[in-house]
Structures are given as C-alpha cells and as structure tokens.
Amino acid sequence: MKPLHLLLAIAVTCLWGFNFSVIKAGVDTMDPFIVAALRFTFATLPLIFFVRRPKVSWGYLFSYGVVFGVGVWGMMSLSIAEGLSAGMAGVILEASAFISVIMGVAMLRERLTTSTKLGLLLSLVGLLMVFRIEDGSVTTTGAILAIIAAISLSIATIIIKKANIKEMFSFVVWSSLFAPLPLFALAYLVNGSSGFIALSNDFNQIAFASVLFQAYPTTVIGYWIWNKLLTLYPLATMGPLKLLIPMFALLGSVIFYDEQIASDKLLACALIIAGVALPIFFDTLYRVFNNNRSETRDTCP
Image 1 (cartoon, rainbow, N blue to C red):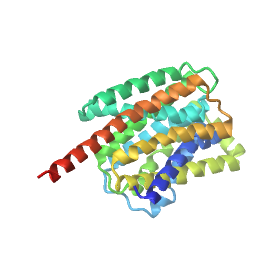
Image 2: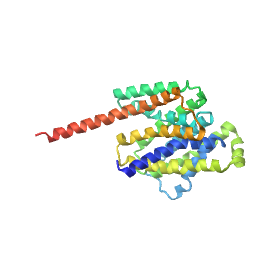
Image 3: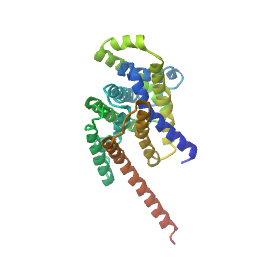
C-alpha cells in the first residue's frame, strides 16, 4: 500500500472513531433523532444539485438511505443519548463485522471457515461481557440500541454488495436524501414538539459544529475516500485498518469525556476486536501462503 494511501486510510479511521465523541457533543444539547436528521440533511444539501444521480435503482437509494440513516446513525445517536459512552458505542458498532458474516451465510449462502467461527465466538463473548460493565459507561438500553445499529450496518453492507455500486460518492449523497424525513418524524413521534422547540432555542456553536462534522468530513468525505481506496486495494488490506476505528473511538472518549478503561472493559473490547481480526488475519495468511506456493510451482523446472 502506498504511504500516502495508508495515511489517508488511517486518517479516515481516526475521523470515524472520533466521530462518536462528536455525536455525543450533539446529543448532549439536541434530540438524538434531530442530530442524525440534520447530519443527513447537510450531507445531501446542497451537493445533490451538483452531483448526478448514480446509475442504481431508486429502491437501492431509498433502502440504503433509511437503513443507514435511521437504522445505523439514528439508533447510534439514541444509544449515546441513553447513556452509552462514545468509546463503547464505537466498539459495539464494530460487531457489525461478524453480524455481516452471519447475514452472508443466511442470505448469500457464504461458507464459514474455522477461523470465522472462532472469531464469532470471541466477539459474542465480548458483547455479552459488555452488559456486565458497571462503571457507568454502558447502559442496557444504550447497548441494545447500539447492537440494533450494528445489525443495520450489516444490512446496509448487504445492500451495497447487491447494488454493485460504481459511483459511490453520488450514491452517498443521493441516498442521504431519504434519511432526514423519517428521522424528523421519529423525533416528533417519540418526543413531540419539544425537540424542535429546544432546537430553535438552544442551537449553539457546539451543536452546529457537531452536525457539520458528521455531515461533511465523516459522511461525505470519509466514505468517498474509503470506498475509493477499496477500488485500489483488496479487502484483505483494507479490512484490518477498520479495527483502528474502535481504538480511536475509545481514545476520543478518554480524551474528551474522561472515560475510564478498567480491566473488565478492556477484556470485553479486546475480545470483540480479536473476534473481528482473527478471520482477517488467517485469510491474509492463507492468501500469502497460496501465492508463495503458486510462485514456487511456476518457477520449478
């Protein structure tokens, strides 16, 4: 991987990791659904007037926009508002990697390797341990909402895979069009007009900066760079870099919110991350071994 591309990939994972702390800054002053709705409003406007619609059906744009906007970031914003720390939110969302594997088996008839099965077991044990953390950084409601967000992220990944998208930047912009209205509607259904009244009265510089950071650097630029790199490098190269996201999420929570990392939390996080990393490691090792064996066979007289 070229040094510049590696630095870009690390920068994106850092951006995505610290974004959980930015979300917390937003939901501390605004309704969580309104925070998510404004994020996707700014992600689609005014860019949608300058970016041509991608060559995919409206069904894919709508389904991804709702699942990604409401299912992932609506639920994730709500989970943080319900007491889940920014650091633990990042760690739990990473569990979407093994949820995607389960969905791949169920929906795409993919096969599980031994390393994948072991990774699933480790991540599941880590998730169960999360519910036993008692330092105030994890609430039952917050953790359940974060798991729903992780499931939604896995569904969004399946949609991307089935849509076979070529124009990822425009897909992100146009699909974001379908997220704000359901999120605004949820804000009204759950909390009535109070969230909108508070928005007009208490919308300050921190809230505005939170929304803009989530909309442009995180959603539009971050996903554009990452998916561009995915077209240049295999998943075996890019996959391990995503493991930096929960690390940066925890670091951001420690820096900005003084989150404590006790031994039980450290073990739970380590199990979840190890469960995701294990199949990637063995898959990479298997590819390297097969390539070396193939090269050796080709050079033999």
